Length: 423
Image (cartoon, rainbow, N blue to C red; front, side, top):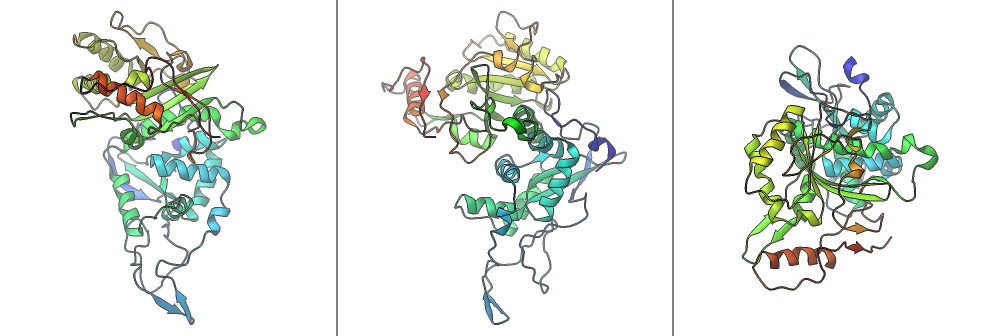
């Protein structure tokens, strides 16, 4: 890792975009495990007669062949070994679950989540790579140097997560292909930025920084973190006309502080989309019952971009207030990151960002639920099941509002909904 990566701050600034590529002119190539120059094996058993077939150093030899070794039958899928799972620390398991859902995190982001320093995060992730739990890659940059190391779920880690959830694990070849696509994805920088935004919020609950009270009661801070994939699966409104209205935010979260609960959808802007495209996303948010699930946050890469977006929102004459909107400029950082006084509410009457609010001071929207720990996913104590009757009532009532049917909803969606879940 280069020198400038070693001394970056663990928590990051308000943008949460610690992807290590700010100084890059153009990425040249992905370098798997370039930090150590070693490959990650897919299994504990090694067959010397068959070499690795993946450029990501993941064993992809076929698993349909049986064999005999020293008079004993060899399982066609390799030797089962759950021992590594019990050699992992709690923070290691949390990291594997996060990577399984959010795909990729930088060293800085991992340090902000679970460690007290970048060096400690580097030492532990190195051991996890040697165990095959993590896969690491970097990009070479014009002018010399490399990007910060990015970490994804290694094949051994993917198998253990699948086993813990009683799911079928991916094949070595399929997992190797997914890692190659991730490393070469043109949206990698955007994904790292959105993950960095949530990691900066989750850093306020870093257990390593609160050893005397690692599990505060009640839990405060980031209590829900859904990925784009999970948002796409959950936030769907199937109209009776056969049309589907679905949201695809870059993430959905819940921030709890000072007895306030702020649920929000995140749109993370890198400046690659036109303002027309950015403003056009509001049409879907207006058709969906967004205001009954949370507010809409725009994280913009510069103050100039924030100013032009707020002006563009005012110029859209067809827009009527139906969703609460707040904006942030990532070139104006704060020591508390996105949780600090960096948010400016937008209204049709005033598009100037004259007052900045803390995230906890933004308007409260969405359901309040009792905290639970049954999700198996970190930072989801306040998560809800979209198939519960209360949530379905919200969606069904909005179908009726669309004029597709005279369905009577089971509850008044204008009232706060209290979910009672099993602890």
